[in-house]
Length: 146
Image (cartoon, rainbow, N blue to C red; front, side, top):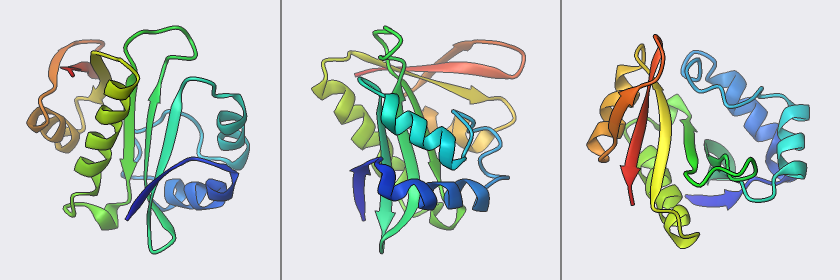
């Protein structure tokens, strides 16, 4: 398993991951999973970080730290993992990687948004030390001190 920066060579595989996991990603909507949207992210991101998780040359996960390009001092974290990789530790490894990347850049806190209809994610993030505050009728914001 490898974690690599998202580059143009992974666009098709990332689109495939999004299409293959439409039901699982219904609460993970950072952007459209289209070639154009992903290419735009790659070409326009300066401080925001986007990564893919590879296993046997296939993209099985996607993670990001974003908001820095807009001037926020608390990165927003997002991950999506192929359903076939649930329970293997891929999501936890990706979370730990993103937290380490944040620490290396000097960030002291992370944030994420969790939909109330996604108890699996809520439980997962809680186990990793995230605490929550209300956001809107559909979701909460999770925070973790680094």
